[in-house]
Amino acid sequence: MRFEYGDETDRRLVQSLQHEYMRCRDAFGEFVLCAPSLIDPNGHRTDKYFAYNAYARLIHHLYEFLMGCASRRQGDTRPLRAEQADRLVTDHLQRILTARRRAILAGQAPSWENGLEAYPETAPSDFASSFRRHRNVALAHVAPDRSVLDLSDFYSSSHRYLVMMLEDASFAWGPRGGELPDLGAITAFSIGAPVTPVQG
Image (spheres, rainbow, N blue to C red):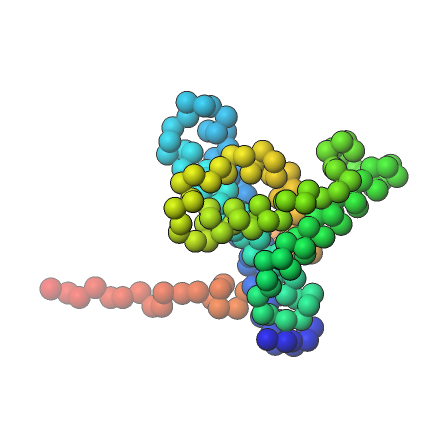
């Protein structure tokens, strides 16, 4: 469905994007809490299960957030084809990499920034399709591939790019002053008035 900036559809999409961004941050926070258990190769299977689920949620929500942002930029809520989505994700990552490299080269990067070698000149050509595949298999769809999909390998090759995209989004989509935004029916969720127990 086509829409215009500032109309009712756009307003609702913005609320949904705020919610999806917060889900990204929540999943990332849960993963960080679970991550120490992954360092121990003999760690407990239950800990690895919880870490996997948190990371799968991060991948899923970040991918959905990026697709929602693409919808907003294009003023159209219709889903993108896989090749369109891959191109948009690659272009977005490229903009982030280019901006970080330029800041480092110009001496304008913050003191805590990684060195230039942490940011390739070109976004990996297979990142977007791998990101989409891991989103689909690890969380979105139940398929036989899930039990053999190597999320550890994806983490090793791509985690830094997920963190860059999450950090990039925080400037526009993070909560202001710690205040949770009004997300419409999301933050109005209620189970109603308490039920009075039947006396018997």
